[in-house]
Image 1: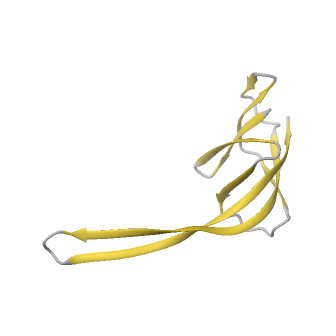
Image 2: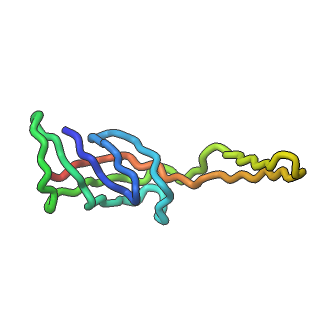
Image 3: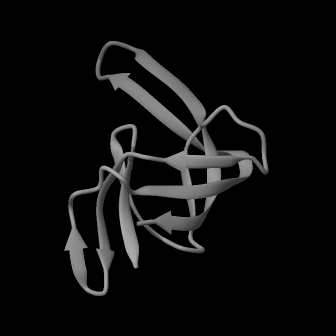
Length: 100
């Protein structure tokens, strides 16, 4: 059994016991979280798209940051060079249960 959930502009295929890294959620580690925006659920090889009463429960495992991303800009023959970078914040969530 798996479900496809939508968080922000991303969709994730999850099943019970999976750990996923999603964009940062302001909550403490160890707290429970409910994803109610479910796109579809597969149960016994049948896909169910009426997901108005379906939710996915998870536990926040960690709050972390990703690798440094460097952005380099240059305009040729102008002497313009610029390097910037950032580290994205992530939340690791363990999926506990799919309530279908």
